[in-house]
Image 1 (spheres, rainbow, N blue to C red):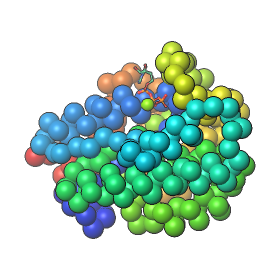
Image 2: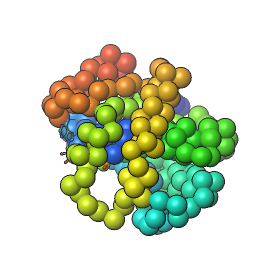
Image 3: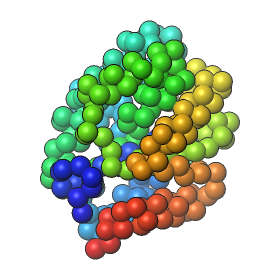
Image 4: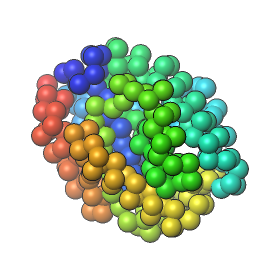
Length: 218
Ligand SMILES: Nc1ncnc2c1ncn2[C@@H]1O[C@H](COP(=O)(O)OP(=O)(O)OP(=O)(O)O)[C@@H](O)[C@H]1O
Ligand SMILES: [Mg+2]
């Protein structure tokens, strides 16, 4: 069931704003994949390896303006390099399906397209760190910003740095993800996240059935 990359595994990323349902849908997709006998590794960004999880704390806690745009992007990419080396690539080589909760498109949307850094710098970092090691499939969960904040508002955790950047910024992030999908339609699928959990899960399965039918069959 090899994907477009040369390792035997398959690499899926989930993207979208806060509260869009990424964690919920990743769990459901992982269950479906395990149900047909696949080995599944669920991971997340920033984080996903011990070193990257340490960097996560630096990135997600504290004031919105804690880091300058370039420092923030470099920390994201430092974490991503470690995550790829220590977690994602070894799992793909073992033949697992790796599902990551956020990946490089988040840096492009948050720091590149919505943030002050701009897309050129982010795309330079992408080429340096990721290049051909990126996802075979990216599911972008699309939801109006207010809806997502309502859904995730209840959690009240310490990792609020990006939530605290405000609604205008979040709307730019949403548009950024849609722009990424327009640029790379073969890798990306935009799935509306407005409906119930089961409906959204069904849409994601349809995308996989259409594009990679072998993945969900025994
Ligand atoms: N389709 C849905 N309809 C209504 N509520 C949902 C739906 N999907 C998820 N939720 C609920 O919304 C909240 C946020 O969902 P979830 O944690 O999966 O989103 P997320 O994208 O991972 O958010 P975050 O970016 O904050 O990690 C949870 O309480 C979840 O149960
Ligand atoms: Mg989540």
